[in-house]
Length: 339
Image (cartoon, rainbow, N blue to C red; front, side, top):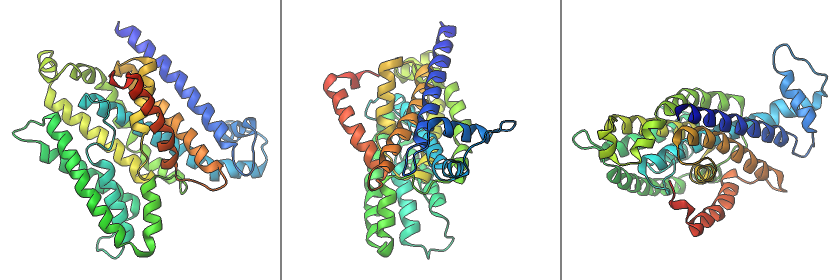
């Protein structure tokens, strides 16, 4: 049985990774200057050691310096948000859970908007660093509020997250009033965007994502057991409180790293896990990697739509426009109830 699960996990992961790579190549060819997919592939492969292709210089510059950083960041952020979404839905045993449920996105928004509205504050840091710090502090605050006597009840954690998000929403509104000329920039960040993406953003996110993802894969079976309930999980040998702390911390860290470089992008961590659960089933050993690569492909696709119109849109608008109708369909078909 364990070998079958590994085979399914590797098979789905490899297949969806190939799909994601194809989507990225096709996306890199779309823009004011159309570039054939074969040329894009040659440009990408030309960057690898030992390979050399005769590609037009203009195409190489457009792909390597303009489009591919944004596409790569979309893939990394989508990977992170979908990963966190799977963990949060399993952790809370709630199909409505998403990566922002413990206040991570709201905390990041406070940090980012504060860096725009109050740039003269002492110890000022950059927008992305402020967003990351705000996200981590918000998650830690929710956990501290919900924990008593060494135990963190899931229901209390959920309610604490709602309360903290509401409070931080008020803080964000106040900061927007104080942002003056920075209002447009702050609002645009809150909508979720990837238009200023750079290879530095990709590298910064990758400092956090791979090691946390590997640890989450190790805990995938424990997440399966937690779905049975905490008492049953404890009777099966799971250190429930320790496991909950690890899962919550890693999911929050992954979300913080993604939101810090992209703003608040909704529905990826909510819808993609449901989409993949319908296809691969509820076993987190398969669902977690499948959702991660599915999330990467999904955000690359939606960002391609966002930047391909007459006027560029924040990608958060597109993910909401696509994700909300699909989620309504899941609700109507009752599929959303199946974890």
